[in-house]
Image (cartoon, rainbow, N blue to C red):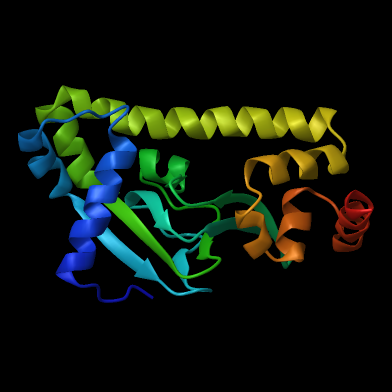
Length: 202
């Protein structure tokens, strides 16, 4: 559930968002004043649903704190296929771009804070500030790069290799992800992941 947040906290989180975006969205102070007006700082508790299957994604978000899980329901079973960790984009991209119902859920894995910009506001920015197109394009590019890498990894790497790569990239964050979610993400059974982890610790 979205929680109330103080003005001081909002200011802090917006400044953090600007720093994260600066490399590919180096706006002037004047431009940033316009741009940040479209941001909404959203707070969620662990277990809260940020987006439900069937809802249309209205926000392109950056995770400022915490992490989220993306999953689909397959024959009554949850299948995790992605995580968004601190300083990464978080969105149902196809739903956001097409403004059609999402086919998956996004859930807070822990208490998290998102800096989110609404679809309608982003379209207005595209019209009035052409340089802002890079913001939306970068998010989409990151998603498709991730998707291609994941699909290739599932076809060419063993479960153990996929887990080791994940640990190299997110060593701290993965300590917070329950074993069953990691196993689902790696497309293996939890007991198989337990054996892989035990072997790597030996």
